[in-house]
Length: 124
Image 1 (cartoon, rainbow, N blue to C red):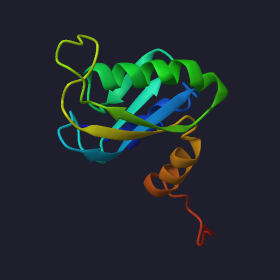
Image 2: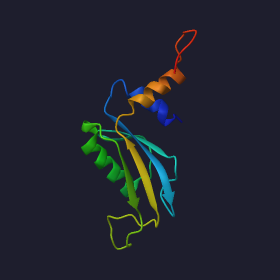
Image 3: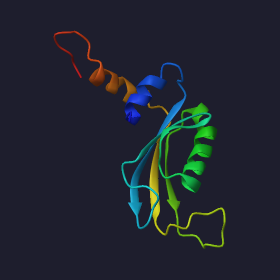
Image 4: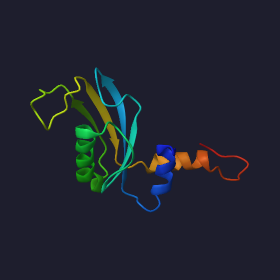
């Protein structure tokens, strides 16, 4: 299975409008745990997961609206709604997600790690 970072490196040359979503905090029952990653394009999820269902759909919608502006942000999702609310999550906990709407810097750093150049020395 390919890592999310390998997918990012492959996609960024042909699809410069990407966003990387990272689960940074989870409390209680949540669909995914801290550290999970998902890569989104303007059309939706490309790789990985941050939980599926309501959370992933809401993040995809946020990204669709903010990606053209390259606007990164931090979001909290409360998953403790009443079971009768069909459109809400009912896991019982909450999760925080960082959306990096311009992961080009990450890709550049990864590119230097995965494909180092043939120079005798580099300055980081």
